[in-house]
Image (cartoon, rainbow, N blue to C red):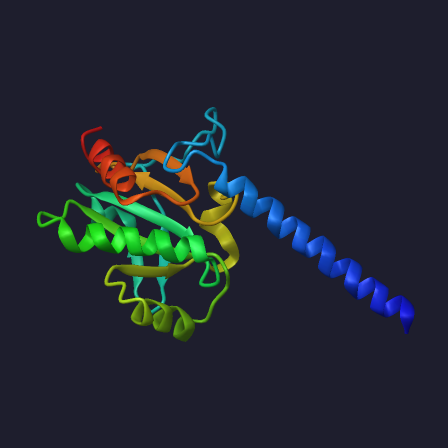
Length: 184
């Protein structure tokens, strides 16, 4: 019995230290900067639109990214239990509501395996009015080597990856990156 208790305590200590290390790493990243994830020599997939993926939404729709041709697409890879993701979502919602001539779309991409009902509840509870999708099987996130959450990928109007950021970004950093992606 003592061995089990010691094992449980040791497991909790290890899990806590891993979580703390990751949190410290995220906090000391330069927010809103391209932190070179994936490596700069990574070859992103190309097609006519340059982003030939399809992903399921939480309400049964399918996102075909080529439908967003001509707009910047902001993909925020997140989980519902990530507090930094929640704040990133609020920052994106602020921009989504305040920019009148919306030349961008926001899609939160859940990589935590949450149910459709949990994702829709998350969006409603937090008053997010943009899109939510789920990366079933982590296909999209593994394609881009998502290192943690939140990770945000900005696609230019032609569907090319403009930049990828890891960690929380301020409203002005997000705004500047969206504008730069649009003008790329």
